[in-house]
Image 1: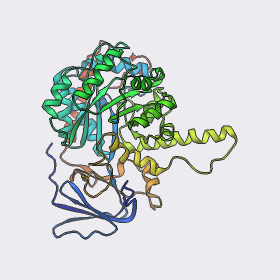
Image 2: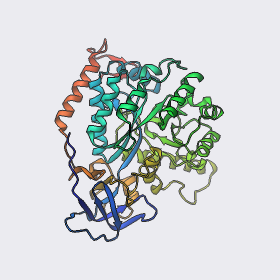
Image 3: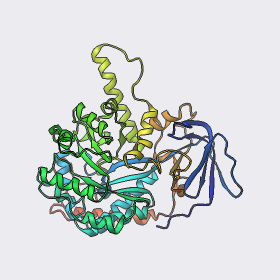
Image 4: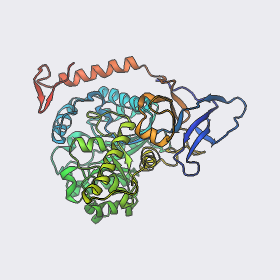
Amino acid sequence: MSPTAPPARTLLRGGVVITADPATDVLPRGDVLIEGDRIAAVGARVEPPAGTDVVDVPGHIVMPGFVDTHRHTWQSVVRGYAANWTLGQYLVGIHSGLSRHFRPEDTYVANLLGAVEALDSGITTLLDWSHNLYTPQHGDAAVQALRDAGLRAVFAHGGGAHEWGAVPSDVPHTGDVRRIRSEQFASDDGLVTMAIALRGPQFTTAEVNAHDYKLAAELDLPITVHVGDGEWGRSGPIRRLRSEGLLRDRTTYVHCCTLDDDELRMIADSGGSASVAPDVEMAMGHGWPATGRLLRAGVRPSLSIDVCSLNGGDMFATMRTAIGVQRALDNDRHVQEGTAPERLDLTCRDVVEFATIDGARACGLDDRTGSLTPGKQADVIVLAPSVATSPLNNPLGAVVYAAHPGLVDTVYVAGRCRKRAGKLLDVDLDDLLRRAVRSRDHLVSAFPDAGSEREWFPGQVRPDR
């Protein structure tokens, strides 16, 4: 793909502007001026310099692109396979099963497909939690796909699924992370940057966990780590990290469902961030999403799509699940007590911020993206008006409760237009989908029972080919 070069200046004029920046908040009628890769001005009325490409967007919502802080993008070509699986079946079916048969070309196609899906739905920043890197070629393919997609991404090197086999694992994080850091990410200034995805203390021996955290420090990489994921999360992983001096402000803790409240406060005290994946957490038994408990502990969570072999890859559905579940939990306390709430604790504004600026903070990119703030890079999406959102009485409420990927009309990443008038640019979508089907067919045929129509994993009938 060849990204479309940005014009010198573009003015998005007359939209309803959600900035996710407290300085300007929501403008009922506002303009956003993009110059090169930057946001130059935001206001009720911005006079464009001569030669500016003026795009009139009355009735449209103009807002920051969404930030997905944790997605196993390599699973995009096996989407839907885990829709009826428990967490245990997922670990067997994906980690011990399908993952072993991914070739580098399958990893490339899966990452490209997942990244394009993200762009299409308004996600302009994606943290790719990449933990199926069996060979150096797999890692290179994953990174190249993110770059070719043209979105902002954090490649979180997670090693290979074989390192997740026995629990606790005595296999250290693969040393190929050093090569990728030096060869692919000598600078942290690119559109695609790097992090390290660690298994965490509940999945490794103490020696391996110490090795992995030392490796992250040696390479100066932010950490993203699973904690509080079902029964494994009840082992006190945050207390263990604190006792070993491993709680850091550049760490994002994924899930947190079964952490104790005091562990959540430890995360807050350390300056760490959190990523909540409400769809997967409820579907696979991780525990109740920790959104409200994190807020009460002093941590503003971000949002995650997570396992795209189970659920869809758009932020609208994830926001709706996050707010619905947390409001149900908050209201249930009153139902049990026979009282009525005076107000709702979690607002639509909170959830939009989880999906934008809080996500950018979790990725360490809030100086570059996450809000429509002059000087930041222009990661901007435009949502078209529809019968589902009109009249636009509450823009934040409309985004959370009524909008959907079909309304994503325009997408800019660092000032480059990646989608216009509802159509992705610089993407041969037919070819990409054909390649995705070929990869899926290869992966399924690699199983001994791939040709059988009987159940090929417990509880899951093999999908039609």
